[in-house]
Amino acid sequence: MTTTLDRVRTVAAREFKVDAASLSAASEAADVSGWDSSTHLVLMMALEEEFGIAFELDEVTELTSIGAIADAIDARTGQ
Image 1 (cartoon, rainbow, N blue to C red):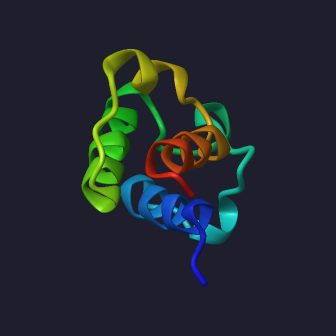
Image 2: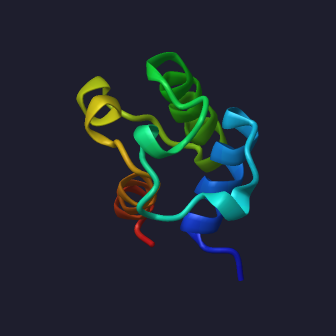
Image 3: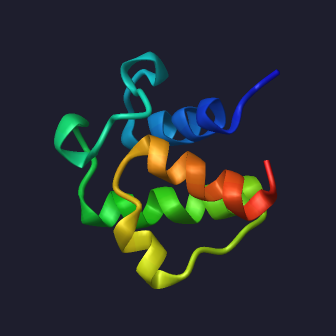
């Protein structure tokens, strides 16, 4: 079974053009080549589409790690 974290890692890897195996729950912008403010917004939009949800702007700016993003999605989707 694919977890939310796995799905977030897959989408993030695609958007940042890195190997999904290089991303962990603790990964943050400082750790990932290509993760800057503009690609963060692109990531969040891709995740909204992937999971059929919408983030509030304040959430987008607060969700700064792969794990925090996955946790927020789980909270929103009832996982």
